[in-house]
Image (cartoon, rainbow, N blue to C red; front, side, top):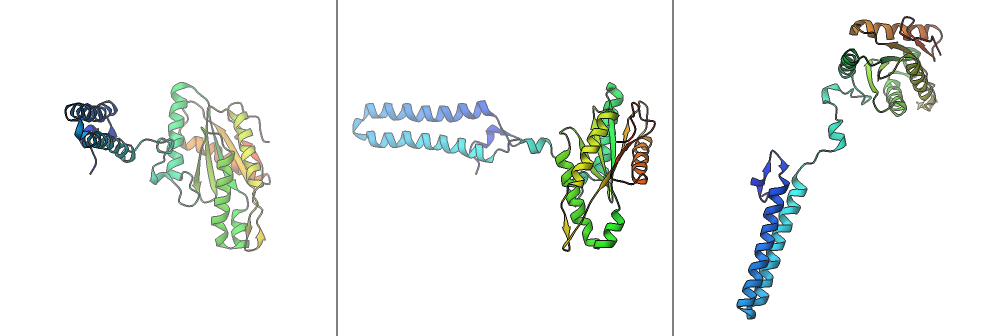
Length: 253
């Protein structure tokens, strides 16, 4: 049974009333014990026990509420809806990253802030699976997603868009800075040390960068990033390119 349940509201602690009640309880038992001790000194041990009991009840009530009231944590505020998480990589799934991208586009459109998108693809993924077997897919994707997550900045959002492709949403970022971020991600993936079936698996990744233009729709924005990715892979892979018509584009790294 939860003590003083009437002092809570929707699982939250009404601090002032709760503290007032337990404080009043401790004070009342203390005053009663002292008064009775003065009136009947011979019974002072019993009255001291009464005071201790009042304090114990007050302490128990406070401790019980502290233990049972759920307090918000940083992880709660940053929690992602279950339906938006990819089961394998634990990054955002296609639905989740698309939702994040649409939200970022709306912010960029409204406030005129820059926004960039990076499309990342694992080079030679099909050949890798054919060589090492389908069981190689899970460890490769898990290792790649972990490396990408560690290399990203705090405001950036990462998600597995499809199969071997990831998207990274970069708020407040223009093409030159996005190219630097994409290059850092590429290097992070190249540094992965992965052994599958006793054989070392070399993993590389290519990236395509596109910058959001005012009035641009989702399909065009994604298509621009994908086009830049295809250009990087066609050029030999393990490199990043910017979409040719992106604002402030500087070409490939």
